[in-house]
Image 1 (cartoon, one colour):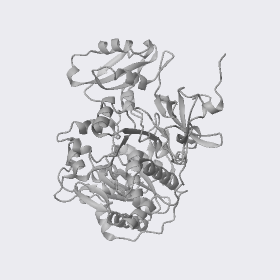
Image 2 (tube, rainbow, N blue to C red):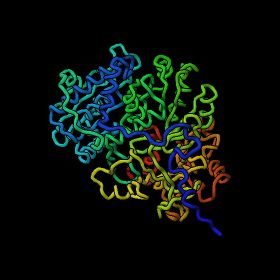
Image 3 (tube, rainbow, N blue to C red):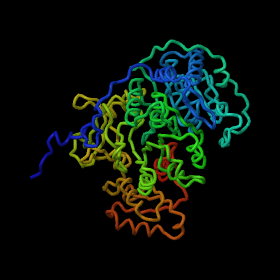
Image 4 (tube, helix red, strand yellow):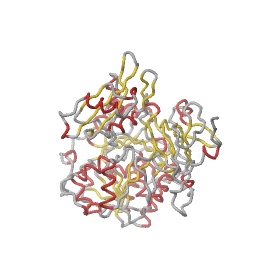
Amino acid sequence: MIQTPDSQTLNAFQTGAQSPLWRPGEPAEIPLPKGNLAQSLLRSAENWPESPAMHYYGASYDYAALLADVEALAGWFAANGLRPGDRVMLDLQNSPQFVIAFYATLRANGVVVPVNPMNTTAEVGYFAKDSGARFAVVGEELLERFVPYMGTYFDQVVRVRYSDMAPEDACGLPEMMRGAPPAAVEGAIDLAEILAERLPPPPLVTGESDLAILPYSSGTTGKPKACMHTHGGALFVTAAQVRWYRLDRHSVMTSFMPLFHVAGMMASMASAIYCGASLILMTRWEAEAIPALFRQLRPTWWSAAPTMVVDVLAAKGFTDDCFSSLKVMTGGGASMPAAVVARLKERWGLKFCEGYGLTETISATHLNSLEKPKPQCLGLPIYNTHSMVVDPQTLDPLPQGQVGEILISGPQIMQGYWNRAEDTAEALIEKDGRKWLRTGDLGYVDEDGCYFIVDRLKRMINTAGYNVWPAECEMLLYSHPAVAECAVIAAPDPRRGEQVRAIIVLHPEYRGKVTAEDIITFSRTKMAAYKVPRQVEFRETLPRSATRKIDWRALQAEAWGEEKP
């Protein structure tokens, strides 16, 4: 007789506080912060005006200086017609100017529209039209992509020269910051000129229920959609991460992950500003610069993609003392290699704490315990947050250990997609008196209440009626000693509809020695027959997204002769 799990079994780990790994004495919920996200900067500047807010290629900027620049740009926005709720597009690399523009937009009662600096001119036009942004703050190297839209979509375009915030004798500047200033562009005004005017900011009239940030979700198909996030949701996720990671004004935090992306924006930038910590900024990631930088500034918290950590460990000049100040190392989106996890723990006592979040949740919903993190694990639902695994078709809860779609409910969930009522209705559902986000991620919860991801629901490969999860195949391929990196995608097949294709980067010592047939033969010993790659392709490198994840979407689009969605 088949036994049906009771509701207690199905919902045993909806909250992190139900887990035996939850820190003793830690509350299940924290108070929801009120007001405008920019008020966290006002508070830190009032309390610690002379404390360093940002470090940038040898220059340091204290909180008083940061606030002065933020209020000057906010004043200029208001003087030039920015009304509460108006959108401001930010197309910038990581820099002090990104921080200034982000908080100035909020301080002027506007809404931040952060976009990827890798976007093309056509993509800029799409985001401008879709968001209705009338103002833009743009890096000088990207300005020509905005020229076609000046005076049409954009009333005002602010040009940023990153080197304006670096000292004249700075060493190690990336090539893009060393050149002569580009020629002036009619219709664009330099940020440095705006800041020199020192216009007073307008009254702060927007609060926790008002729209604050419109980040775009790349999605799996179709055009990107803007996620509507309020000041209250952004403040909550910031306060939650500050508490979870035990950050304070003495913390020194890296800001190497892209600031246009919610992980870099909230976990690094907003969390640091919220608690008065210091940010270390780099406009271009350069692993060789990290050893000297870490020895000088002694970071305590590092958010890193696994590839960043691997690169730094192999960097010229790296010695054990580079990591001596670190207390927390965190990341997400890709798994840290087991050998690197072991080295971090044995050599420095560091535990890599992975986390999970989406653009639709303005970063974290799940984080690993700092004391007992699990590898390749999303972690526990954070404060005030519920999560469960359901059948993707019926949305009925599934028992612990069974794979289904992960749902999330909490203060950080978006209000919906901007001007996309139909998409919003598909993504946000009401269940058990709560609003839940359908993540589209497949996973399960273990006996400790920790959540694990298996794959994307929409990434599934359907080969002759059999479902194949690429992440599972990738994990098994990584057990081959020759495989350095891999991506498994769906490729067209005239008979099966789709077939499994593996695209692999070999370790240097195996190149020319391992064949596609070797990989296929190995796979047959690890996988069911229908999961075995029918095609194996070797490459020197794999494409990466701006957040340094392997860009499987680009590879799959290439396989099908399509443009990347």
